[in-house]
Structures are given as structure tokens and as C-alpha cells.
Length: 190
Image 1 (cartoon, rainbow, N blue to C red):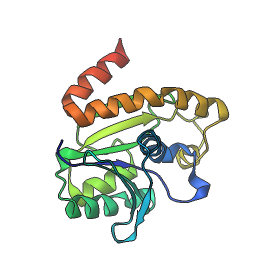
Image 2: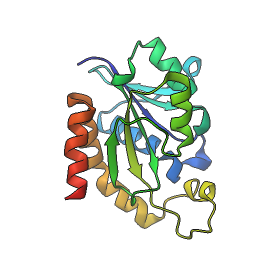
Image 3: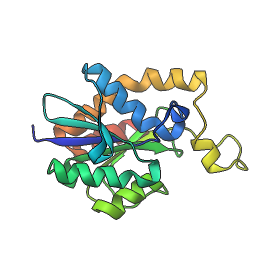
């Protein structure tokens, strides 16, 4: 398998653990745990890294969300990973907690972390969007919502969906974005 980079987006620091905006960290942590991998801090590339024996590099930027592109650009260049071998996992308020979509379309979808990656490396990477639920009240500030922690019930629901999320992530890595999109996204509308 060709080397690839899987980046989970989130904010560093204990205060952001289990927040909706850091669900990308949560997913790559689950993948690392499943494979018995340990995280190491790579200060030079602004990220924590876990390396799989099959050439998959997992990364969690140590920059804040709005500067995620810094770590992604450093890592992509250093490891010579083309954008078509890059997967970015991040939160999406358009879907219920634990639902997910895979796409390779351009654009930010209003996500500042993705916007920074696009600004620093361009497009062409796969996006793995994990549902974190919409605002409970339309008057609530979006920043307050995405920086809020999952409730115990929501976290339980998300945990119950982790095996399926990881299964489709593996499919994405093995077969590519188009194949994974066709299967995962079609399943979601049936």
C-alpha cells in the first residue's frame, strides 16, 4: 500500500477533549488504539503522529483548528504524500451524532480547519465528515455549540458507531475515495 496521511482535526488541550469540534482527534485516537499504536509529538511538524506498519500515518495537529493547514502542509511535504493520499477527518453539524459522509469535493462547507488546509495545500484530498449534531437552539452561537462537550448519551452513541466509522475509513484507504463514497453515502440514504 502506498503511504498515506490521515489527519484528524481538533483543538489541542484537555479543555477541548470530547468536544464536538475535536471529533477528528477522537476518531484517529480510536484507530490508533485499535492498532495498538502510540502517539509521539513531532514539534517540527506541529503534530502528534502515530505510524502504522502498512505506511498509514495518523496525525493530530497541535495547532488550533483554524491553523490546521500548517501541520498538514508540513507533513505532506516531509513525507511526500500527494493530496489524493490525504484523508481529513472533521466535525460536521449537518448530520446527527455519529453519522458520517465521505467526499472529495472542493470547498470548505463552512469549516475553518478545512479552509486553512485548502489555503495551504489546495484541494484534491478526501474529506471524512463526522456528524456532531446541530445546534439545540437556533439562537445558540455556533462556536459555543462546536466547542461544547458531547453529552453522556451522545458519547455513547458515537462510541457505538466507531466500528462502522473505522470500517469505512479502512475502505477509503484501501480502495480510494470514490469507492468508499459510493458505498458509505449510498448506505446512508437507503
